[in-house]
Length: 70
Image (cartoon, rainbow, N blue to C red):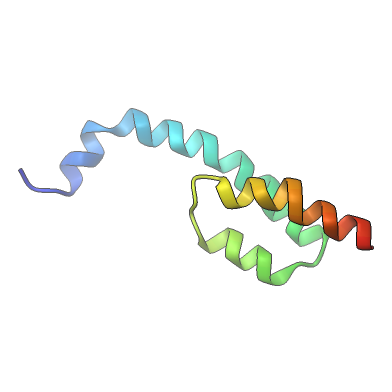
């Protein structure tokens, strides 16, 4: 069985679920990084896809520290 488009078509509900989970977290994290002028984090969050793990860490840990410093 070849690996490729077949897997995507067979698992489309999982892909929709992953996208529905990741997209809001990514949006919030990018918005916070932009507001804090955090260019390096913004680029990392935009490029890396970590199933929202990196985004959640940024939202609840990194951005809170930066808000306290400012």
